[in-house]
Image (cartoon, rainbow, N blue to C red; front, side, top):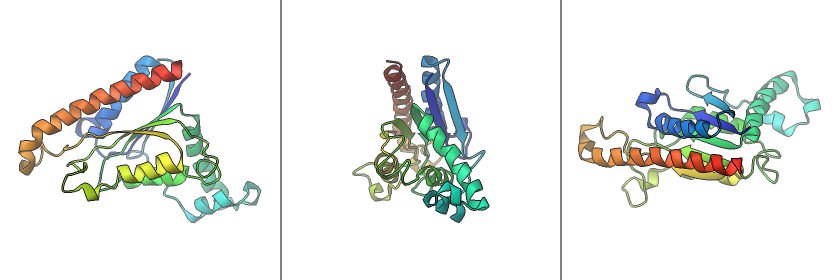
Length: 216
């Protein structure tokens, strides 16, 4: 049975969050294709994982037989998260842009699952797993736009997900999500709506294709 690891990090509920809404479209299509499959859902806004501590970090470089009690407890939590990553046939991540980058809760999850010698480095135990990132943002940071240089979501996640972890990465980018709420962006509402519709369609298509590929 196929397993989807679904990570949400928006602080807003689905009806107020583009990343959650688009991720939901992906997940719905995935579950239609894999009704008997497993979805591991981590809502990092509702239940944040622990930020990395000295014990959790140092435990990754010490044999388990030499762990202190504090290191053993902290490392067990990291291993649980890493196990979910390694078991997944596909990964779905909602990554809204907050202050030009990802939410701190998502950064905490990444700090836990990036482990040199296991998930990162020469081994990359989840290498090749398809990961779809819903990278929503209130404005536009696309090439050629005035704020292109402030794009620290896709650039960062490419470095950690594709390069460090070796995952097969694809972004879906609903942008201009603040257009309907910001009077100064009123003329951009049609573009925002079109971007949202494209993202929903892309998410459903991506989920269906991945499900078909895994089933084959």
